[in-house]
Amino acid sequence: MNSNLRAVRGDVNADGPAPTFGRSAGLHRPATAGESAPVSARIVPACPPAIERAARLLRAGKLVAFPTETVYGLGADATDERAVAAIFAAKGRPRFNPLILHVPGLAEAEPLAVFDTRARALAAHFWPGPLSLVLPRRADSGLSLLAGAGLDTVAIRAPAHPVAQALLRGAGRPIAAPSANRSGRVSPTEAGHVVAELGDQVALILDGGRTPVGLESTVLDLTGATPALLRPGGVTLEELAAVLGPIAAAPTGPPRSPGLLASHYAPSLPLRLEATDARPGEALLAFGPDAPSGFAEVLWLSYNGDLAEAAANLFAMLRRLDRAPFTGIAVAPIPEHGLGRAINDRLRRAATPRPVR
Ligand code: TXA
Ligand code: MG
Image (tube, rainbow, N blue to C red):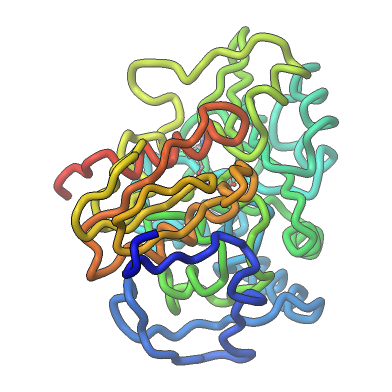
């Protein structure tokens, strides 16, 4: 191994427990690489009294960031038009991009959307869990029109994370929650990432440690005759097909999921995929034990070639390498099956040059 190569094992627990930055409001900490300025935010460990406080804030129309099993979400009451507008403003999100609704389970989802046999079967199988279903919105759902970006469908899911479950039950209403990052950037998998992304634009950040899945939910469109995979994610295509039979690949043409623009989830440094050799100044995200030498730094997505471990590490490691003095981030080839499909989807978007804004 190259002597000036600093290798870091890609173990999710390598750094010890997830950081907790403070207990009360108005915390200040110095900016680190990738953060533009000192931030202040209300970040609290997700203990029951904090979850109760967060639920009260949601009911009062405030924004709360909370952990789900996939990534941290930026939540607002989905029946409150002003609260939903605040999500779009905080993220700098285009208003044509609809939000996913979060509910504790099927009972709370049925009044919002029309569930057919397939949708019920999928909910029974995968909820709570990382699967969002796109379904016809009920006319009397009471949902903010802005949350659905004016569409007559809704994307809805029941997250499995115990903090998300407790919060949703406490709030007692559907919660719209996109990933808690600024629009177009990598999703947060730790509470500290939310601080770096959104700072004090959030009333409260519930810190529940690192999110175990690490990639966003799978988005499956059930509004047509054949189910269509709009976004590969935490539930794999293979798992869905075992319950549903044939699934259409992501449709071509204008995106049916408005958030699925080609460039998304992007770090600042250029990303080079399927890398098998080093280029000067690049850092490497390695997968499997045989990492090529010559990189300025190497982080292992998974030393053992475990796709679930790689998914859990992906966004946090992209953030860690997205800084000077590196000239770019190279990524080793990742197999295109199971969770590898979702990992490669995010990597391809992150590697796509961004339009000039
Ligand atoms: O894992 C997740 O899904 C996370 C956590 C917080 O739950 N949330 C998340 O939300 O990733 P967001 O807003 O970052 O991504 C939602 C995606 C977007 O691509 C959006 O276009 C799509 O879901 N979507 C939402 N409603 C839709 C609809 N009615 N039809 C088609 N796509 C929809
Ligand atoms: Mg997102």
